[in-house]
Length: 402
Image 1: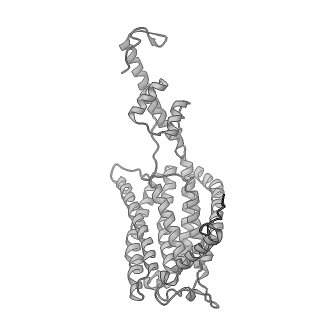
Image 2 (image 1 turned 135 degrees about the horizontal axis):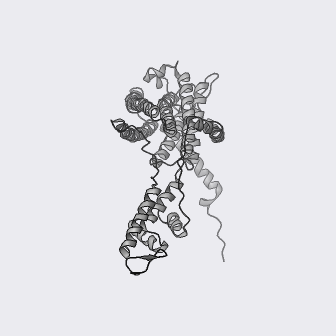
Image 3 (image 1 turned 120 degrees about the vertical axis):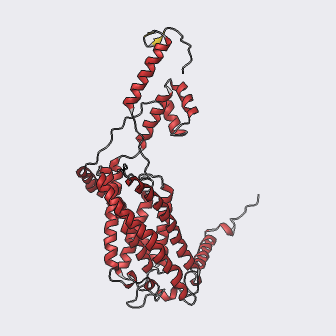
């Protein structure tokens, strides 16, 4: 038999060459810079230091550090704070052990259809109401408790608050905070400041840590949107760093941090049962969110990134790519604004409790009422079926259940 040597198309050397060629093509000047400008213009010269793609590797250890610090923070700070604010856990009645129902719950559906309930009722000997109650209790067992929600909210609140203060301190004396056109003057030759470097690295490391922990965090109704948001944010921050859009990037990060810490603090008070404090903070958050995300972001920042560069340069791929990412963020802002408006409606007379529309609400377990109703139904059935002996009807033993 003739042996066939491995094809050149599958050899490691060929793959390395392919990746190298792809990298060379991807980082071509004409893709990311206006005509006549390129990577050579971002080479360090004396005191002139520019952002480099290789700098982003430092965000990986920063993200891991955030994950470790978060564990310590939640145990040593968030838990005592929760106790101080009076966070209380609801007593949850655990579902009784039933292999048949547990197997259905784990492998098929957590919310069975009516036909499935009827089938499970026959298999287990439970009434349909008891089957439904079992699934309700079992679903509640898997929902995160108030303390876990409080710990996550307090961690995000702490970061967003410090990030906003640090970002404001880094930009307060910068001209592009007050004049949007300053974001692009001299592009791409925008020298890097130490404050910009650390602001970028810490923000990017934090969002990467959120992406790493999203599987273990509380899952809300907008779980997929959160994934899209984290990926879009990481891509936007990384891209703006690589092609030196650092001035626009710092403004966008500051804009987002300005409202996020208010939302997380409202959640903390909500979990602690401080309804009035939660409502007042939520009102402030809603105002800041609408102004910053739906007014300032599209009509100042996005307008400047779309219009002003075209007065200086011809459009190029990087221009469209960057603005496309901003458009994704704007769509997410609109989606969350709808949720905020729905929650704001609850401030109308008679609605004095605000809850996160994204939360997976715990189902009420009126076990005492259910038990009383079951007893009443049982008593009625016994009266209908005649006298009973040892809990079973002596007559009409084959009477069909209603």
